[in-house]
Length: 416
Image 1 (cartoon, rainbow, N blue to C red):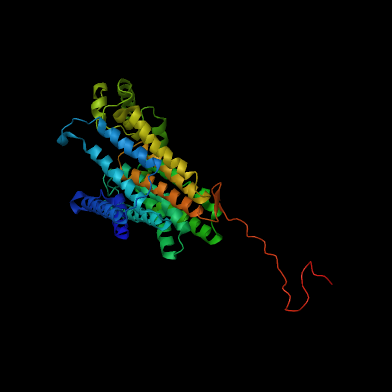
Image 2: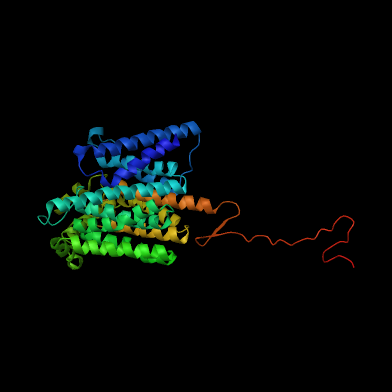
């Protein structure tokens, strides 16, 4: 039963990076259906076995956050409750399923692989949009907003690099490595300046882990990066390059393409309701009196305005719990986790992503990766110190000479 539930969860994660391609194809329904199926099978497996994994402090903080997000809606008619709250409830079940079903290293790796394979779909689809549209547009995206797509694809870069280093099967290893040139090309085609900055953060996994590669794998990694650069030079249109070249000017611009005005209004609104906030999904209503009618374009500012300092504290505790868990990992996995988390935070800065499935899945996967490695290295006879596995020294064996029956006694105490 657990394997069936895990299979449904694997499909759910695989669909995540491309569920927004188009609603007419039923992709979003597939994501919801597999999520519901995985949840039902997971609950059934728990009932049959009568066992459930002990929750981590991350899950406690997530539960408190969702409860707090619903407190402000108490008394609101059911039909008027913002969909964002129901999304938070669904995400709470998602992180629990990842925790409950991905209880081994192979299963956690499987979910990371599912995300990389799903990112392949969106990346290849974006490249096909470019082939059809040619130079008629400035940005290319197969799945809704180009900025969201770029960040979604960027999160798969550290996963693909790490899996390409660790998988023993050549086919899986090269499939994961192959995502880097395709993913980087697709990210460039989106023309997302935030995506470009986030991909730079994601690619720090390469120099941080190169020293741990064998000569053959190091050569393969360098070749992949060279191919990625060649594809970008050959296929990214000039219009996209010109847009990406304005990134520094946008950063220097005090208004940040209108975002600073939104954030200024959000700070003014937050000052009026600093503790409790304005309620889930009410950011636009909160900043409307200050002449702004847009979303926050920053996940953390959105949290402060909607959930107040209390809800922001619960959400920050979720992030902090995962960060502390990552510090206990072995060196290679710790670097993957920290780079992936830094990439996630970078992606959340220009986007309103606090309620995105991708964010909660990455946090749950990182926590799961930490726990399975800690469990592996805490086995009897193995120590886990300073992020490394240390086996105790073998006891020294001293040879003993046994005399033949009736013969003289051999050894250091034998008398001559």
